[in-house]
Length: 163
Image (cartoon, rainbow, N blue to C red; front, side, top):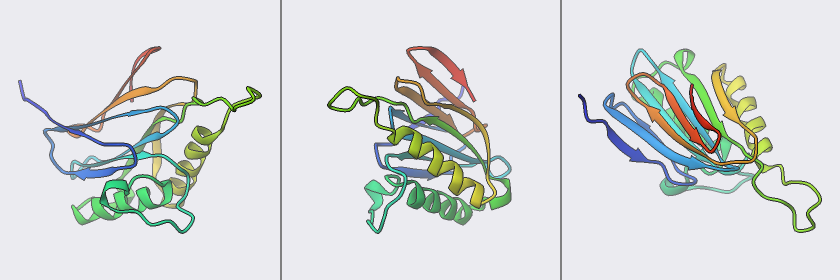
């Protein structure tokens, strides 16, 4: 049995790898785990996206996944530097839960929903197909992204899902 190398992707971080014996992991609530994979080159990237857009804010290596627009640009550019072809990259998405209630208790913040909407819009602009998603609801998710085959294993209080 092959021992897989595990790489934790922190909140607001994005990481790209061509280690076919690796997995990337993260935990998301209202944030979104965006997994991009190019199967012919075995190049994958995971971003732990916190907010829909940078709005002029800049990031560094530790926060290159914080904003959807900057995270996706980083993932795509870095994956292409590792040999991935843009037209072969596919996406899977997890998270975007409605976790936080307003102080008055009247409704929920919609940051998770806005994150998902922004990610899909940007991916569509680049012609990247979303192959699967486990999003929304009111609970967090553990995400494990397998770089051997692009599978995304999602665990939550509702059970397991594999995309």
